[in-house]
Length: 388
Image (cartoon, rainbow, N blue to C red; front, side, top):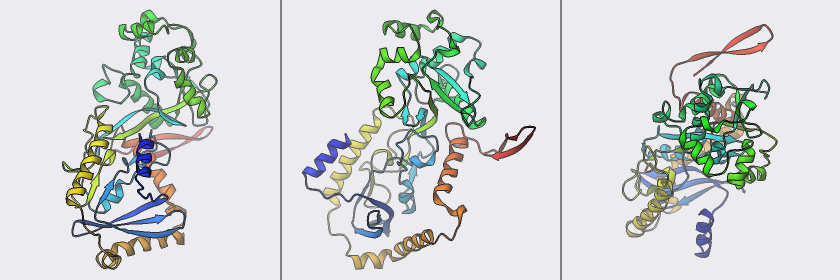
């Protein structure tokens, strides 16, 4: 879809400014006046004088360490908040199991083929299957695992009577116990043959109709969905010979910037479309993302064409109106380049620590309480790590 849109832009002769990082939306009296960017190729600041901005930067993907968003996709919602835009339903996210390298949802047939789920320590040692510790009946455990293919997003309504209990158990291993979790398609759960008669009617009927009641998980996956194996092979992961690390990851922000029926925010001239706009709905039906992006972009363009015409402020006028905001960016850049803050001011370190904390206490499972868990230092000794 994005490739088609890009071709359309190029065919229309619209100039594209690549390699520009947005630093500040410049406003005055509640209206857009311009945009301040850093040209990543020339390392120079650049100002765009404009009356309208269509903000299509996706959700705030950098908030979580466990993320299904593409690597390098951090979002830019904070820039809009800094300009005074109002948010809506920002606490509403969609979470689900995803692989970490590469980042990809492990829904559908990845779960329906009933892979083995293995937990290890941080170094990848001490492997153990942990799901059977929580299920009295092996058939029930496998049926819940199968349902993760259908019920991919975590949903509190599906914890007791659905498959979201699998999400909670994986969260417990990774975030509370500090271990790593993998899907292993090389062996059946428990290392033994599956008795398909013990599965739920839904799981058994599906696998029987697919002709997949045989062999090991990777063999079933190749039979049911060979491209699913090829996808990981193209990314350097051979599911036939290695395990796939997973976690409970953020995939969509169901909230965003508050917009009106023309997708305009409370700032005149600033429009938020796609995931950046808070129009997906708290429970987010599957097709709403595509619809919101296309409909919102169209309506924003229609509004701008009808009511947003006119010349932008001249550079001199922009500096007069927004000079203090521009000076703040100059000062921030100078501070970053000076290195005066030392290691504790390393922005990447700060972002990584914040994202890890969000995945631990502010993702699918949220708590404001401080909790303590033991951290093994050496044989015969231990200490405590405060988190939360």
